[in-house]
Amino acid sequence: MATIAIYAGSFDPITRGHEDLIHRSCEFVDRLVVAVAVNSAKKPLFTPDERVALIRRAAGDDPCIEVKQFQGLLVNFAREVGASLIIRGLRAVSDFEYEFQMALMNRNLSPGLETVFMVPSVETTYISSSIVREIAQYGGSLEGLVHPAVAEALRAKFADGPSNT
Image 1 (cartoon, rainbow, N blue to C red):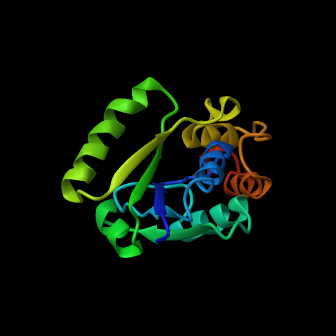
Image 2: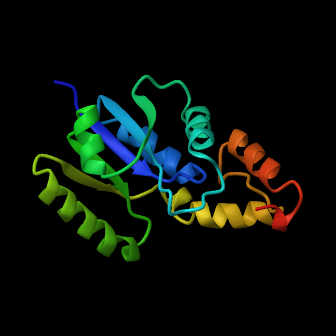
């Protein structure tokens, strides 16, 4: 039986840190569903469709990786795609408390669903989507932070300067 995992997030935008976890996850699962969360309460920079397209560009043509949108509870989406694992990245100790609480709640809601915590590579630990958006907003270099297609999309979003959002 194939091991299916979900790596869920807003990915607004996908960073090299996300890419690192995606590719490393495929070393121990048969299929990884990168799940783009659609949250109507948030005002993301990119639409869900744009985020899906950017993730597909950044992830490449690895047959292990599938990219989908989801809304609602992650445990319900996991059931839908047949996932038994949730992959979560931890950049800092400060991430752990929230992630631990979510892992316990997900296990409570779906007892067979396990959470695997992964630390990013040393080279990508400092990268976050919010920092990348801010750098892009003010015209800073995105080299090494995001895939070139993502950098291009960010430059297009902020083409008129910081007030374009």
